[in-house]
Length: 341
Image 1 (tube, rainbow, N blue to C red):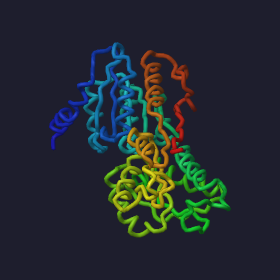
Image 2: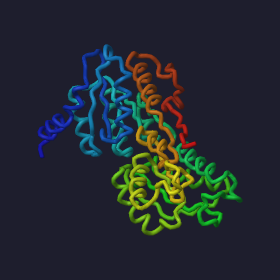
Image 3: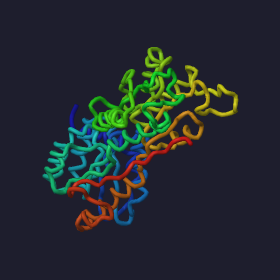
Image 4: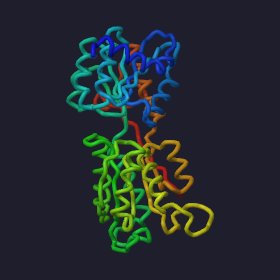
């Protein structure tokens, strides 16, 4: 397929997003790994709402979860370069080539949501990352479950359904080898272990951050482990919600005690925890089907990106932004837990 045709096709695909552009002095390219990802969608909306459109002209590209498409979008943009690129890479390992391209054109880059390797970020002194630490998210998930099970590893409460002193659970993971997926999964297990809790991982399944995939994968999980399952950890809210939907169809999350609501006193209630703080997840907490989520603060992240972009585009030192710039490269925002009371 000829490059010109591919780029024309990509432009057509991007037209709904390009309608968000308005006139301004500085052009900013925003490259999303997948505009249908609910968290990325919300973060992008926050960025667009915070940019001063009299000064900046944001142009949004959606790679639709294809690194090939994202590479083509970047190549096309470089024919009419922007003043700054804000990139959510499809593949963090693809950041190396991306950084080299922008360095050659002297275009500064802010990565977000998917963290490039440190050795890639140092390739270019005008290259930065804004995000939250995956370690913190996994640790907070584990601590919510520790609290639910009574806080004492030697005396688990009634949520230890079989009374064996061990928490039996499953972990629904994002993409294979994705940094956040690997770290969040590891920190759940390590935090439980550090606090002295025995955790038996019944199985770990890959659902690629996707609700439908988690829904499908939970069928086999429940067939194999439904009778001893005591907790479900999901690397994000979308997968937690997919798991809950399938579990509901299999008899979980019903008002078994007849008190008119779904809550942890129902005999078929199982704690499920997610990450992101999506609005649907918060609604599920209010309904009683989701025990908790770790909120990935998209408003703060968007604000940090916009502040950093403003400093770069105005020629100011990025160190002068309101947020700490760790190592001259990283702006870290905090997660925080939200759970049913």
